[in-house]
Image 1 (cartoon, one colour):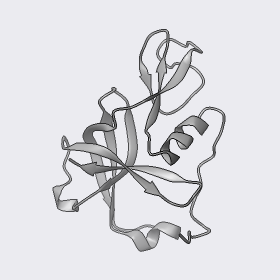
Image 2 (cartoon, helix red, strand yellow):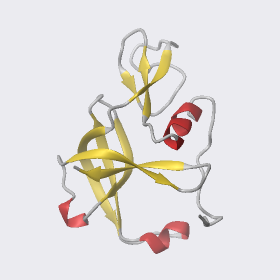
Image 3 (cartoon, helix red, strand yellow):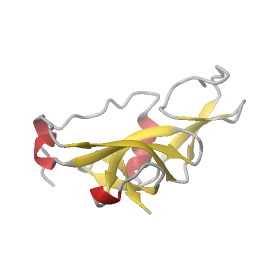
Length: 134
């Protein structure tokens, strides 16, 4: 697959590398605190709930509901050819919220609709999460 060289790449740092590696395996990993048992997203080195350093990655169910969304009609750079597309805030069952594209018919996207994770393989090194309507 030929990828636009201007496509922005995430930074794989010490906190986020397991998340990105999980996506390459088509597995959605989020963190969970071993002390307070709260789920965490985005990846970080300490729990934002109890400040414990005992956090680890666990598989997420990959399902949730749309909290909010927007339809992008004008985009720039490598995304200009992909318009229109939908970006949403997804509340996962684990209680964390993440932002990702929502796939499927735009007219069917609505707040409160159920979604499940899908995987977009950009190339051999990068897979992005997306969500599709259930």
